[in-house]
Structures are given as structure tokens and as C-alpha cells.
Length: 142
Image (cartoon, rainbow, N blue to C red; front, side):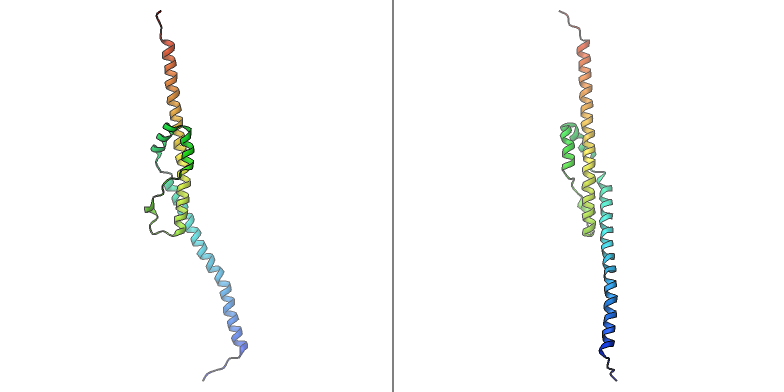
């Protein structure tokens, strides 16, 4: 036997369902957003860790050759992000990894370039000092 419901009962049931959905949707949306933030932050931390070990010897040599200009180049030129560590990762993780890697890589490149610049200056002053000593200790016979 089919039971007939009046409009008030049906309205109450639909109102209850809608109220539950209205409360549950923001909670579910926050959970999805939290996972995206977690992926982004994890990617950023991994990128910063990997960005520390870029190419130290190369930037030391660039600092020796170019001097203070190398420090500026180290800050301005972003390092190449290796793509093999991003295969199968979410877009949020990829974005975080790329930003973390490039930011940390730029810092490290500039630091190593500054070390190369200091090494260049130290070697230059040592050569200058020894040339001055050699010139001062040379006796001329006229």
C-alpha cells in the first residue's frame, strides 16, 4: 500500500538533508584544501633540501672569474629544476618543489659565487703582496 506523505513531512526531510549537506560541504572542502597545502609545503621543503646541493664548484669558479658580478648573477638566474623528482607528483607539490628549489638554489649560488669572489680577491692580494716584497728586496746596481 502506498502511503501518502503530506507536504510538511517532505519539507522537513528535505530541510534536514540540506542542512546536513550545508554543514558537511565546508568541512570536506577544508580537508581537500588542507591536503593541497600539505602537498605544497612538502614539495617546498623537499625543494629547499635538494636546492642546497646544486653546483657549488661551478659557482665558486664563476665567482673567481667574474668577481662581484657573479654574486648578482647567482641571485638573478634561477637554477634548473630536475624534472625526474616531480614525476607522478601533484601540481601543488610540483609548484612547491619548484619554488623551494629555485629560492634555495639562488641563495646557494650567490653564497658560492661570493666565496669565489673572496678567493679571487685573496689570491690577487697575495700576488700583489709578494710582488711588492720582491720589488722592494731587489737591489739595483747602477
